[in-house]
Image 1: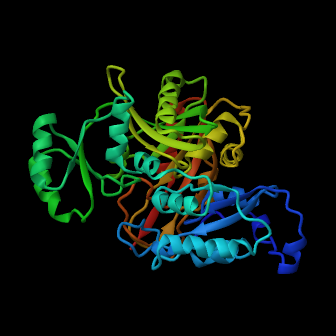
Image 2: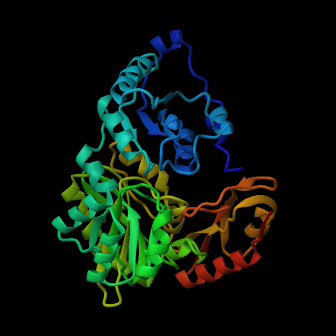
Image 3: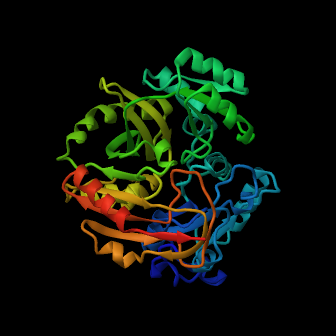
Length: 440
């Protein structure tokens, strides 16, 4: 499987020998960065020459239940980052012992990290606890519950007076049925700690519930009312407890519908778009969340719905970078270095956001299917289509692609620009019409 390669500057960094470490003058911030899969943000940070990075990995936990399907870091990636100091946390030892082992290990480096960033959802509890144990800035256990446990999250929304879907924790099919009788079908069933709509289901009837129930994995579940309306993604940068700005993306199809084959995309709206008028309202909502959850710094990723009557309902919040190409969409649409701004807030700086563009830019996830890849449309063919700025293919002929039911499942993605959301969506449809993936 091929992914965008790391910037060449990250593969030639030489680790100094112990003698050099004792005499080296250290004048750069050092960031402990959670690294559990190749990502554009990690590539960007490793390419910066004014920041030193130590990677924190939880690969050893990949055999635990409900770990994301991408599993462990690929060998090629470990080889490419071999010159970057990295600490692998062991799953067979108490986290406190691993923190002590890290503290002894990090003492041999030129300088220990003073800052911490976890861009991943699934290791939020592990990584934040670890950061606390080694004396780095981190989310408290309570904050992790608010941004990771969807039931605790919705309770906090209610406490702060922020509208969201009614929900109930459930352990039996009967409890789901009771909830549906009170709130009506359809309902949405999901694990309290899921992400990327993994194991999330829209259930339209009692009969469908009975058919689905035997296949549900053993997890902690909740059911919530189905919210009709338009779905949006929402990102925010926060520094010193203040929302610096928010960025709104439109989903052409609700995330649940993308699991059944609808267009899987996000389009960031520029200031000239009508939907940008939501910015003031949602920015106030995000500031209430930041104040209520005592969030001082970071990148926040959220979803919300706008009902036909104009009511805004918050869906979820995550204290980490958005997935897929969403952050890059924001940077391309507004014309600024979003990864640089994100890095700044985790280094406890307050970046000045200067925008040089005003357009709509979206990321389109290219369809995938399980099987051995026999043929796939070349990326160069897609890059020649109207509005396509950049892209990546993540499968090649000969790859065996597993089946995944997740909103981030894809065979690659492309970034598409346009003067309006409609123009971007039309151009995305042209890409879908041109793209072919043949498997056996």
